[in-house]
Amino acid sequence: ETGVTQTPRHLVMGMTNKKSLKCEQHLGHNAMYWYKQSAKKPLELMFVYSLEERVENNSVPSRFSPECPNSSHLFLHLHTLQPEDSALYLCASSQEAGRRNEQYFGPGTRLTVT
Amino acid sequence: EDQVTQSPEALRLQEGESSSLNCSYTVSGLRGLFWYRQDPGKGPEFLFTLYSAGEEKEKERLKATLTKKESFLHITAPKPEDSATYLCAVQALSVGSSNTGKLIFGQGTTLQVKP
View 1: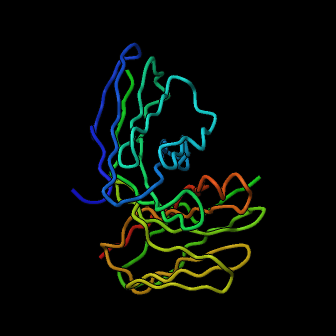
View 2: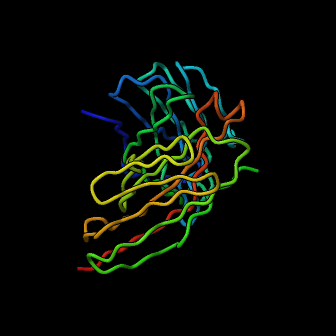
């Protein structure tokens, strides 16, 4: 595997379900990010982790819970979501969360909440 | 408030017809401006980073330029495979953004190149 991978690629869940999104980066980077991309809206930053420490929580509802067990893996735990949470969830990584910040994205997870 | 606006929203070109995409930004101070390409159903693909006014970068048929208020992505003699959505993003110099790498994205320009 190379670059940034995400699983699953597609997910359909009910409002009462609990599910998790997984991201893995194979680039040796120290920073990882979760973004939300909704139709007709710009990418919205959700969370930033630098060396496994959360450094940004962009006013995201508590029904989204991130986890970064090490610098290569990032999870987004989902529970009691709303239909408006349906979107493409993108993971990204960069060398560091600061000066040199070219972010490399995974293919995304298309989430549908029914 | 830091803001990024891209224009036009959509652009249709004939193969070989050169054009430019615009990214206007308002930030307290610019640390970097980034261009990405996004194909349908895929994540954004990194293209360029520009750090200071006057800087230019090229890759195949694409050339990105930067001024103090905007960036242009020039596409020379485009081919159908250049069809995609092009995203612009900025990282501000404010303490929070610099420490977290926060990028502010525009809405993108969807380019269609017809053969």
